[in-house]
Length: 419
Image (tube, rainbow, N blue to C red; front, side):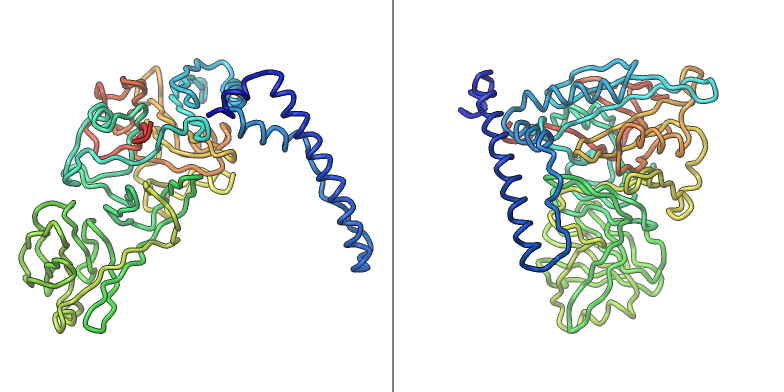
């Protein structure tokens, strides 16, 4: 705290700047000498020291020392990226931007939240369910935000309208609640950054000397031959087993019951459901172990939220609707998206549509917009009637249903426990 406080003193900043400059020059001279010696000793024809941009190095060091410098740079960058827009300060490191763009002469209202996580280090980005106890739940985004003391919230991944169960990969605090569907893209949230990839489940049940592939977790059954796992978050009871199938109730890693009917899901266990021909082998010793992983195996990932399709991949526009079985969401619609920039800033977007004052966007238009604001990775989230954004206590866009329809889940920016 003392260092940050005294860094505000102008004279000390000048002294720090001078010290940095001297240090950088010293490093540069040493590097030149070292590289020359290396070239001579190894008889390499020509080796030059790397180009040092002392200005950038100095700026990076000062940013670490002074949050005020970072905030000023953030303010300037937002004004450059969003000219002729209404820019609101929500909190240090958090901006809410309203703008209107025109496509074929017709208006589209766009709501954007940009977060510099290095400044807003008292805030955490994570998915949030509408209920702490079950996946089968739906609530408005205002309720979800208030229940989680969230400053910002945006509707999250797709969900089954009848039940509210999320459709696609959802991980919160390193716990997987639902597995992937159709190999769709997901965003991984780490302490120090983000990544996007098409996610697959790489999980197994081990027991009685056998290793059995788990096809999904807490998701609708696609094939009768699939092996599914239902955890307590699914609800009180598992679905009945498929034809020629069986459900196995597991408590504390031991199979306690087998039935083709619906089985109670224990709080300290789960239910495995699948073909008898595959699962009966586990009954020999009845001791089992569930191993849950994903491909890619994102080490140290804290949260995952899926969506689809891609919008921006490796800095380029990339929309793969057909590959992710999302052709039904084409056309011009309200849209929601999440992305990140090369300097680790988060971008959340809600686009209004289906009205004369805002006609919505196509996926290609949304992808181009995400790239234009600096995203190197971005994915489409659930949209249409689900598109709703909440900022600092209120819904800020104009969803078709006032306040937005009840949602299964959202992506939120909330204060950390330490703040």
